[in-house]
Image 1 (cartoon, rainbow over the protein chains, first blue to last red):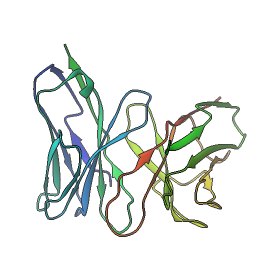
Image 2 (image 1 turned 90 degrees about the horizontal axis):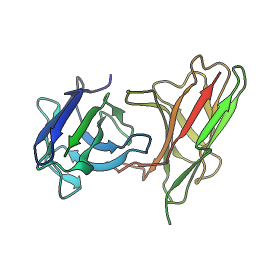
Image 3 (image 1 turned 180 degrees about the vertical axis):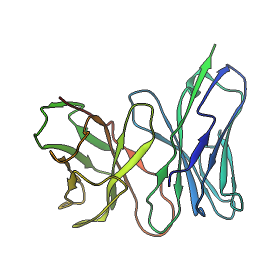
Length: 110
Length: 114
């Protein structure tokens, strides 16, 4: 079952902050975050692992609550380049197979 | 430059025809994946392969077939049995084994079947 992302869409002014949430009904090994610009391939942002380890972008922060099976991506002081659709991918078993959420569309306006 | 290539970028086919989408990577990754993306939707896993000559079905494998004869290549065939094949198809690769690895995506192939 795919993780649920919220909100589905958000519009920001440049410099504003946003939080994107990802919730799973299954126990999570890890959560991966990707951003996709329209018509392009998704680009890796970060991986959050059980135990608090993170791999990825230094300028993006995120949290992973293992008990609640949730992850949140924090976008602070948003820039125009942050616009796109953000996907979380949950890993709930062995191997590197991910189940992706439906995405959160973020638009940053000047 | 290392990366993943998919060809063609746009593909048009008539209903009832099989079509094969190409995916090649030179990142020396063991694992490769095929995803389908419909407008406004997330990515759904079609097939994945952790090693040459081995692959497993993902969530929506019906109507699709793959092969993994070489480490660098993971072609996807959309058969006539796939009821709604029009979609954006993304190929990805990553390291394999225990642990978490970043997936690298190709530019995608947009398939239109009429």
